[in-house]
Image 1 (spheres, rainbow, N blue to C red):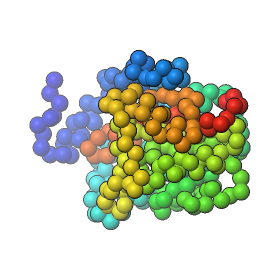
Image 2: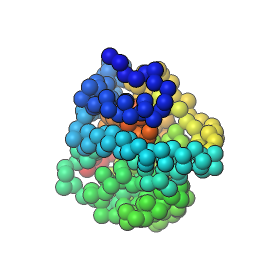
Image 3: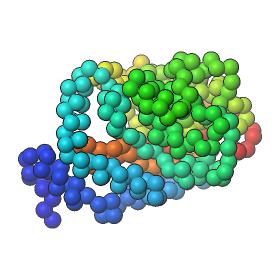
Image 4: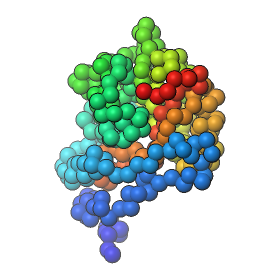
Length: 300
């Protein structure tokens, strides 16, 4: 089949690829596939099998549609080219109002947390919330929703969504604990990931508090500072070549060492809106629900 592989003009090539793109022609089962035999024995019963659902499909199809807005995408490309040496990609996306992320649907979140659709508790803290798209999925289950974010442009978007914005060093000093803290695709983009996990553990409601961690696999820690990429001060090296082997390593070499135990986990696609070159961007995520090793109380 001719796919336009040898077309040199990027605009023409992008248009052709978008016309040919169809989610139904892709083997999406690989986005969710896990080989239980490669997991350590204690983790095998904790894995939750997922699949493409209506919310995920809607996000992908919306991203595909947006990528066909030719003049809008050209404008985004020009602005990104000009600003990328000066500010982070996250801030550029916040300025342009684009680059939304998708980690899980409402049903996938409920399944992972093992909660009913009408389950509600007090406080959620979403660390590094970006534009708040994923926060919005979790928010109906909480009476108070707090967020943190470094990017100034993303902070403006979070305020517009009426989330309670906390300083990146202030969330531990509020005088109260959180029922759930989410740390989604942040461990590989922060300077002190182990220290962060220890602080989170101290900030959860004892007994019932839960941490949701999403980590891109393969795990490759880098910090985006302005337009540059640098190694974090506290570098976590995860062992293993396969998704399953890296899940084992994260569990043993990271979570357990800072006092967490895995309660459930799943494999999900980490999706981002595309641009003139691609309909959407996709990475492999491992998403965990963690509890303190000291907790003896069952999950909510």
